[in-house]
Image 1 (cartoon, rainbow, N blue to C red):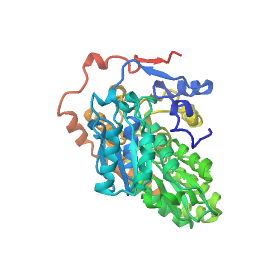
Image 2 (cartoon, rainbow, N blue to C red):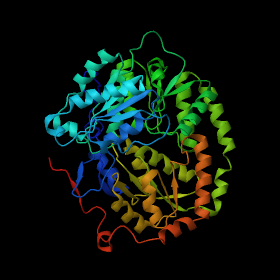
Image 3 (cartoon, helix red, strand yellow):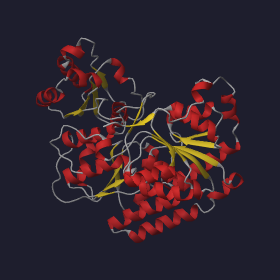
Image 4 (spheres, helix red, strand yellow):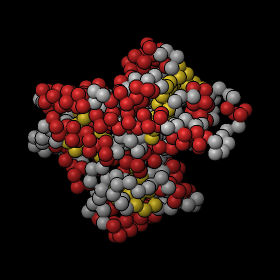
Length: 468
């Protein structure tokens, strides 16, 4: 994949990585299909799903010193909520008339007002579906006001139409940041490494930075939770390191190709073995192999008894709903804890996951896999048939399992990454398996959201091969 700074924005994931966002069936069938090439599918019926705009806003609001202009109707800013720095933002409030006549004047006024009232160090202008209709020229307005205000302004082309995969919003955002906010690399590399972070929490990032620090290497995050004032430090790093390779790949490659920072891709640091492999790769890349091995051995010894807390629940069946690389890594963690995997739900899957899918399929060829994001009906239907002892997920998806009386571990509250994640996740699982009463109470509190006739249908009757 070649990244060009001359391109307006990043290509969609379906074309760039070959990822698919629709599948329902056994992991064995998915692995066999992957050998010949994953087939794009469409849903003839779909519930709402996160868009590239939502992913972009979620990421950008963590960058301290950055102001946001959402160029669209007022509702397009609804996904913003407080987490981290109080990011100043403004929405241009496009109307039906603006969708026909254009809203360049409103965009210019919004940027000027944001600068006047909040004085951000940089401004990101996010497109919306209306901009894809009225064809407003974000770049021209941004270029004019950059010179007038002497502040970096980065157009982020999140139009909601090009991709069915919300994570494209991460790629689009990174492209805009590298193109408009990052300087070119001058001189040699510094002593620190970049942790490429797109969706991770502050607690998880702090643990990973501390872990790398034990190896003798300093680490900073990019771009999530990185202030505008320090974004430029990313181009002087010794190398960039992936946390979740699904999300990190475009950012790592953009820094490598456009700013000369080497990129080290590795599976997520999830579980004891997964974190040890991740740390070993960083040690090898930085000349600290022995120190990384010593750090890993020390943490592994400290976690030697972690499985004991779950001994009474050995073999308990767990359903995992996470992004693909994290979900596949979580499957390995469950084995380390003496638990079993009952099914997977992932927002998308691509060729990079094929080897891991084959490994799982070798032991559990009939393991159910659901590919798609925001399709609650499909997941509820699958959970009703599987009836796992626990569901591991993140955010709103927890509600669907709880309504069925299935205990949930919500990873928005419990960190998954690193050795600390092993300890925290094991303790959280033990508590939930030992005390399922809360989930049962919620299940008794009301009727389900779907009619029996609807739930009696196959989960994938409306998933069809894409016609080209």
